[in-house]
Length: 512
Image (cartoon, rainbow, N blue to C red; front, side, top):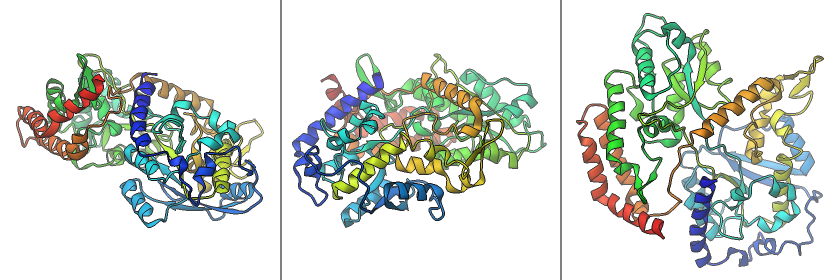
């Protein structure tokens, strides 16, 4: 609840700026945003699918084959639509989409999330986004199927510029090679000291029994990527995810001298002793580090528990047929702190403000279907096409399921509000129970930020450069190009070049 209240404060803060720039509901566009805000007077029936429509979608991820795809065919026939899909890699998505806005070539529906949340507010203020709130009374199951705080997140009061997409914040967890532990007679680590002992053994004691120097302990995506796994290291040493309240003041991790020294000393030792992947500083994406686990190079890495069975646990068999994983809680730091990687929760499906109300209603009807009666179809697929029931009552998956990828289609439309959306019937009840227990464990160690979403102008202007210079110095400390004492140099430089002003601006707002 605290996290929700914190973000709602952020919403209220941003709403002031939106209200000062005018109410977008008064704009009369080709897409009839004004009419949408007067819904209830509309003569359009909520579920009238008589006119054929073409709806364009822009989403991230790998393209899905839409020709001869039974799920696409089913949806298009049911809603009397043709779906046109464009896929774009999530890297630089915000920049790419802004070029579409500038050119006027905006799709009907697209996924917001892999970009800066301030862009969402900017798009709303520029009348790029359709306000769906006035129409939701006609789609009650859609509105009720999503928590109110998710609808309100990032939106000014009285407006919903987007339909929230379910995104589990504490999805990922640490995986460790159980077969390596067994070979070395070691237990799953519980503390950060235990962790280092195990990781050292993985790097030096031939855990895969090849007689080769071909393994290491763990990898990383730089030093401060909280989404990609820094949490279990930096958080264990008391570092803030970004800001931490200390004695009534917000303090950023860049100013936590003592905690930084402890964390960087840990990473420096791991690097010196070949326990840490030597290329960690070159990784820019969690998949870079994660692939080292899949290829049997590192013995500990974080994974997505709802897909590890068909990704890492399957890929690794190509390198070591006897490989097996155990999954464990983040190790406890010196003061007992445990923190797990935490992802943003503000993802939404947003709709082009310049399309007709009729098309918007068709999209909302599709969204509602996808989280209600259609949920099982875009999760498990169609009976006798994607799965079948055996004589003993168990469900067996068919080859067409992998080809059509119903689960990815469901996510691209609108993911249902259910953490077990990847617990497919044929994986069994034990899988679903295990998955639920993993998520319950992860939530216990949520790496919380005490920042209620305040914005520092100085941080907007110079923060990225300051942080890059800060991490560069600390990376040089870790790899031995600088002394450990230079942690203080990094902190002092960050503060002197703008950090002190950022802290001042943040705390002035925080105290209000």
